[in-house]
Amino acid sequence: MKNRIKIERAIKDITQEDLANLVGVTRQTINAIEKNKYNPSAVLAYKIAKVFNKTIEEVFDFSDEK
Image (cartoon, rainbow, N blue to C red):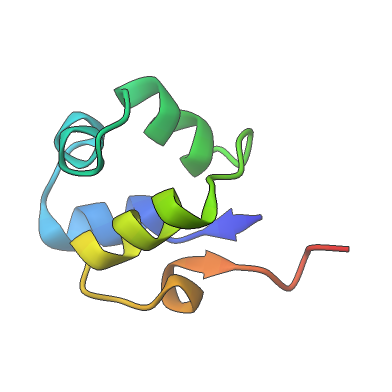
C-alpha cells in the first residue's frame, strides 16, 4: 500500500522518530511503512493520519490492494 507519510512528515517538519513517538511505535516501524514493507493496522493508520490532520485515505492509497 502506497502512502504519503514521508511527504507529510516533510510538510510538518518532523522526523520518523518524532512520528513514531507520537503514535506509539518504533522508528523502524515508521520506516517500514514508508518503504511499503509493512501495512499498518487500521488503528495505527488512523493515528498517523490524525497526526497530519488528514483522513486515512489522504495519507494511504488503497487502490493497489487486491
